[in-house]
Figure 1 (cartoon, rainbow, N blue to C red):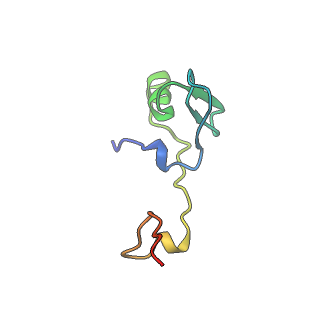
Figure 2: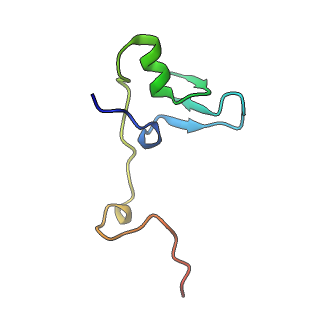
Length: 72
């Protein structure tokens, strides 16, 4: 089984609430831990709502970096 990385999921979001800093739009909850871990602990199965985030065209090009280059 491949471990699900919530940071790469389109449904993942962060909150301003320090008690519940991570959330899942698909399952509509907030938690202290990563949503995929909570789903696995609760149901005993991997998260079935994972959707990979869509990337911009420049992020998909070989040699591109996600860092901003401030050189003029």
